[in-house]
Amino acid sequence: MPVNASFDTSPPTSPAPLGIRLGDTVHHAAKRFFLGTHRTATPEETLERISPHFARCGITRLADVTGLDRLGIHTVLGHRPNSPTLSGSAGKGFSLAAATVSAAMEAIEFHHAETMQLPYLEASWNELPADGRIPIDRIPGTKGGAFRPDNPEFWTWGWDLMNARPVAAPWTSVGLYSNPVARPGLRSFYAMGTNGLASGNHILEAVAAGLYEVIERDSVACWRYAGEALRIPMPRVDLSTVDAPSVRDLLRRFDEAGIAPLLFDVTTDMGVPSYMAMVYDRDVRKTGMHRGYGSHLEPAVAMCRALTEAVQSRLVLIAGSRDDFFRRDLIRNQNADGTAEIAALESTPCNVDGRRHANHATPTFEGDIALLLGVLRRSGIEQALVFDLTQPEIGIPVVRVVVPGLEGYLFDFYTPGARPLAFTRALQAQAGPVGAVA
Image (cartoon, rainbow, N blue to C red; front, side, top):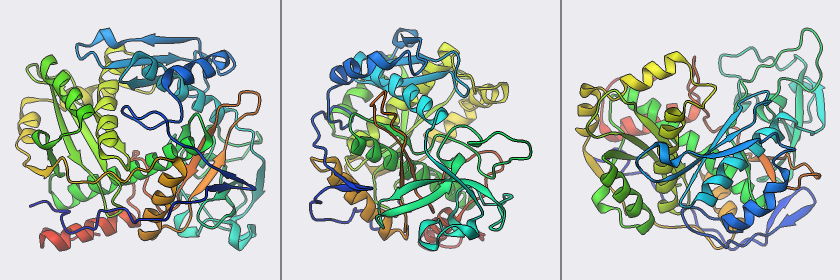
């Protein structure tokens, strides 16, 4: 049976918002482009606007690597040789322009996070104003970490969308460099990452993208932890029931190229359609298993993101361009599509209808953001922080979204938080006794 069948997975309805307030400004943004994603401008318009800023952001090359694979799904790699973090970025899309914009915008996001210009505060958590701090049990990076509420740390201020006020978050949960001041003895209790780092043609487009990413990561983390704890498979989508034209087109390309896609519905109690895709060569073993993820109020967009991200992951490995992919990752990837592993995956029952989720996307980004904030409130989330990283001399909206209480990446030494534990208990209650859950 579908183990998540009893969850209420419909996003709450919300009256049309008057706009989304960020600080003293109320923003509005209507959508104009809808092929595989939602944007306020076409890829061609975006590319023309951002191209003059490539050199400032350290981008020296945007390489079309689509032809290195046989799928024909556009994939572009971006190169920033002097980057202090990742020198390679990647993008995908239904057109070469869309994939180029995707790769370039990811590189631009990294540049902004590496050169973050936000003001900082050095203080202990105890010294922060009570209405301007994250609850101590929801501070990112504190699970099993060295955080102490009486120890001075570096913080920066963001805007809480839920409570309309400034709230401080750890510096390293926002930027991509360790501390704003370099001096001996400084440390950070938070492992830096890119979760919630997003850009767009408009700041609300960027905020929506950041919210989708943190929801996506939380959904994947909850399902992966629950699956391992309860020894149950993730709900697998019956691909024959998918009727969205954009997704059908992708599935046709996979079939013609001899690449097998698996699609898993990892939607949680939040109700935002979320998917994990896994793709592998249908006939040749030990060529690698590649994953992609996607969340969106329009289910077809979430599916497209997951499938095309899996293709992007495959091409990044084929091109050998990822500079944080080490030998252990290569071995793990190549061993993931052995004969036994593939047989186990393919035996997973297809118990989810591809039309399960309704399309709740709205014509505007303020409408989507209002729905997503309602979803978070219903799930017990009390804060959704936005940090505007936009640099005036560049003028491309870049934000970091931090949602305290949502689960993040499954790094090494991962410790589950409250949400995956509660999600696992809820699944266990549905499926009956399987084993104790911590």
